[in-house]
Image (cartoon, rainbow, N blue to C red; front, side, top):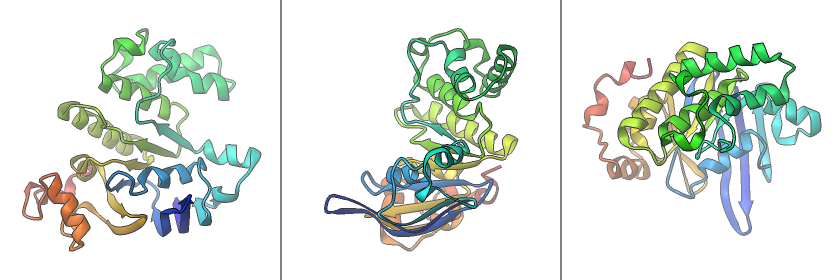
Length: 257
């Protein structure tokens, strides 16, 4: 579904991505973790061509997005939905209007069809009762759910999540994790999640990849990830009180639902 082939990206004299290669299979929830500045967000920005690699290729299925231009680039971008770190809701629009915005801008749906589609997505995220509220009236977790409804309203093939639990309390974070798992199960979407929250990564991920200093240091299913012998991975696990002898080993085979 998504393939990186020896992708390198530099900013000034710093190499942020150093010939990284990996593949995100269709229908997976692929989680990218790492310390701040490791290259996580730079990686997903390449997937939608917000950044162009200095060398290497990025493919979305059979499309080469890293060299696409104009209408071709817009067509490939249309395969994605994005949940931004801060939800990025327009404060002067209601919840309904925020979610309806992509449909009104990019489709020829009637208002009746727009209403049906928006309410369907809001119901999936238990937000239908908030349709006429404004973002300022919502909690951080509720805003994230509205942002997620907007990300899926066009039924994209792929959803990118940029720090979906950032700034949320642990209980709300786990609720967002559950919604991400529900969407994968119900809609079969391919998901790419950037996070520093390993508890979230281990809960939702079918694969977890860790980037450190622009290189991939581990790429494995969760059960194998927590058993990694890589020292950087071990330190990252221990920093969040996750150990190879910890509770994450129990039920790991079935945790992704």
